[in-house]
Length: 108
Image 1 (cartoon, helix red, strand yellow):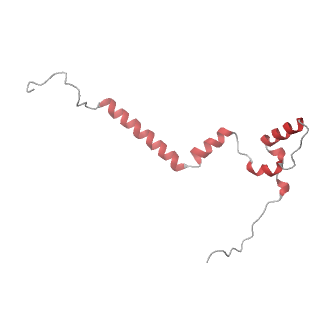
Image 2 (cartoon, one colour; image 1 turned 135 degrees about the horizontal axis):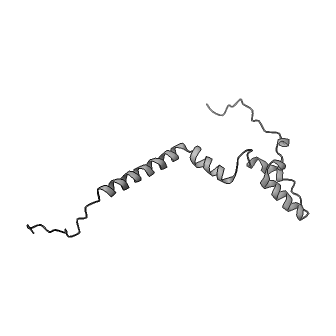
Image 3 (cartoon, helix red, strand yellow; image 1 turned 120 degrees about the horizontal axis):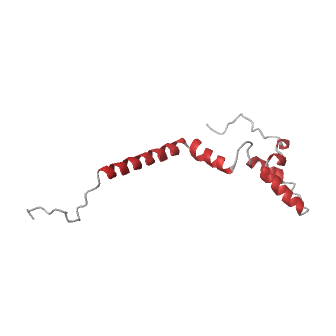
């Protein structure tokens, strides 16, 4: 019952992470170098930036439109239902009961 894991945890080698592969960290490294400083721990932040991730907008697009298919379908269905409702209201406007009729009936 639980807790008996025979798989070993694989820790990646620290030498695979290079600051030169991440443009954001290279910018930080250059800013520090202009001040005469050096950050020996900057390599520890490389794992936060996965390779081939694209720009910020590409990440946003992937997150909302490819990664969450249910949310995309929900937004699509909501937009189509709103469009159908607006089209129906255009052709069949709702009757306002609190307005006086233009041609009053003779029974009043």
